[in-house]
Image (cartoon, rainbow, N blue to C red; front, side, top):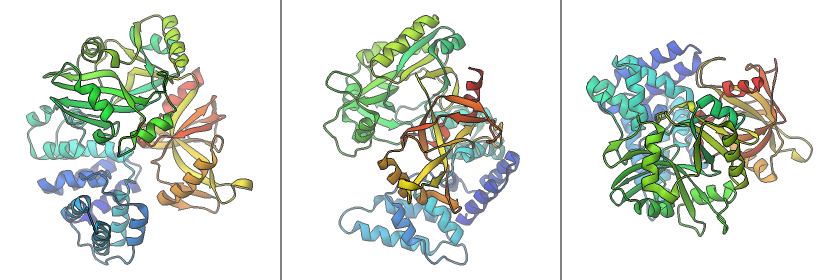
Length: 507
């Protein structure tokens, strides 16, 4: 199939607000793919090719996007082959060779294909809403139950392979998809509450655990082979030898663990989040040690624990992880939950996560079984646009337009973002320089005073609350919003929801 078919489908999905029309367009594309094209096509549509990031930067892509072909001729298997070449080209002279490879690919692409390829190469495809559309489209095209497709995608962590299996395999093969040690699964997500006591009242008997100011990790071990991945399922094993050593010392052969890692100071207190992320993102080992803390276990020595209650998983985690378990207590007493929250804050942590003791592990989903509580209202929102500054900020992008995820489609299509406010507070000179350089790279349009961007950048925002407002489509506006930090470890689809923010009106 020609790459042009993917571009046309993406345009059709973007052009309509009707979810049914979006799903129909994607399902029609899926039905026309050859078996060996399915996973490739889905990966390209989501901006997640099987090769991952191939080390091509914005400047390289911008330099290559010159004169375009007049007629489409590139197939999706051509693109896959070229990405494979780019990902494996290394050694002396590799920079020039990679530039030549990229130039050749771009020269054969039409203007619309160049734009599509640029977004794929730079990881800037808008995938939040499209992933949900594609999941539904796989079910439609394959005539398989949507629940079966969703579960297979969650447990495999790979919608492309799920699509291939659904479209070319049997229903029994799709339903047989389960946990595989070494194959990442989508992590379970937490909702938000204003207090630990409110969270316990909502969940009943719960494990109230410290919420660490670290980076989410998932660890797979089979024998001495240990693999560590991020919340986005990127492999970072070589960056975290400290974590590998801890897991290799556990009394198990096969295990899948969920947890966080963070840097500690000499007294065992957490270092600033930026230090953890600096070490977390380093290709080479550094002096700063990242200690792992685990809060869940999904598999132990041939036994899947996903559908077991948290109480069972906690017992197994205590047996194998011991001192590497995240601190917490089981209680149904709101006063006890508040005490634990206070202790977590005193220890320098962010707050607590309250988890229903009888709940299974819901891979890839955000529900009411896990509820995070922070001492101040901090939410992960998405940058929709940025205004040029004035005064001492003249020439710098300053005032951020902030959006919350509309997961339920209450104010538009599911997976889109609803604007909830603006802020320029909390931006350091370093952040101002960073966003001035970054946002034009992901620009979708601009006016005289504002640069509108792809909604892919997550920023952590502290607020004093929300208030009713007719200014924004979600009916609320943030109160005293200020920037805490950018969250490069999070995807836009992991942002907090407009429904979560609207719930603050009640409190």
